[in-house]
Length: 220
Image (cartoon, rainbow, N blue to C red; front, side, top):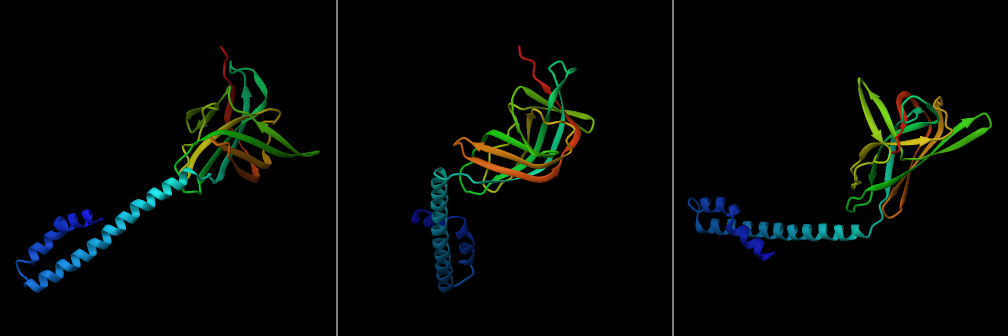
């Protein structure tokens, strides 16, 4: 602390007081330097406290478990075709646009796995369908352009403290008709590297149809 304090007294902050010495009496000059010394002493103490505070927060963060919050913005549903792009397949693809953020102050971390459960109201009551990832791409029309998303690599960016990360996550949902237009619930589980599970839900919503097409990846 005293090294920073001494540097401040002899550094740029002392220049105005050196100019003041050309015009002021010795008493005024001494008083001015006394004020400067007191201010710099407080500032140096604050800088040291701030460094130690950030170091403590970072150390605590290493032992913290993340707590994610999230919101689902839109849910697309579409048809599926085989690898040749011609043969229609059963089931549908679901693409979820969402944002998520961590509410615990800690170093950033990544989500490495996603689970999906879609519940639909049917004639015999609610039915839940599970989504799977991998071996599929999703072709999405955005205006006049085509955006291709590979389910095996779809990821949100690393989670940061109170910094929402936005992205899209795609799934193949077997036995779910692509003609479905409404859902009772969407339950998306984000799983971190420590196997912590973070649930993001959307209740009583509608699918956005006709925007995507799922295609099975050709196996060599």
